[in-house]
Length: 330
Image (cartoon, rainbow, N blue to C red):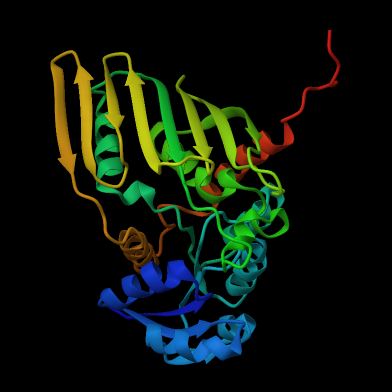
């Protein structure tokens, strides 16, 4: 099996804790190069990742020989430009979520991916959690009947300080939005994965914290083709981190308190049972492994550009339809 030589654009926390270790642990992957726009820190990043080459300019990396695939781990406002350039140079691309700042950017990337022979994937990794795999099996089996309602609820307590490297996630020009773009997108993708094609969406968002130009709290409602309704609620304003999901069907209910491991409860016609499922220490590992398999088998990845576009279409719908149509009281 041939080795896939990777180039990495960006060297933040995700790369150091997850992407780099995942690539180094996969037998048929190699980190051929890394790009970081800070030359004073490039050597440290290159040494940490054991990358053969270092680039200050990411454009040199995507043009470079000896690189088969590129992992993009930069702020969102850079994603579409970097993805398009990598595809133009024939590189396979796995891009951090979300795929672009808005639906328009995602559409350009989707069009380019359809015209390319290279694979393009988006790093929505939660479908590879053991719990989510099991939920998918149960939903598809019909054990809990037709799905009526699925509700995902997530809260994060991380609020970066002014001098924190990830402060950009609170800047609309660089992140595209707030909690909905940052981690709400993950939960939307999970519901699309579990419930199928969406036909309508809406929602609301707000700011509990002053001094931010992005939302900290948002709720999304999604109508699915097969009749189910999905609801995603996210907040960065909570005091306790949470990642829960419940699915109600005509013959039973599934409840999960933590998507990345722990117990799942199924209450149905035959009573109630609990299943314990493991967590995944590095959720990027199965994501990257599956993407490499798609490259070798010359097929689209599990989470492709179309999924990135679908998630962004829902998010944009929420952002654009927040206000009442006329703003007048009766």
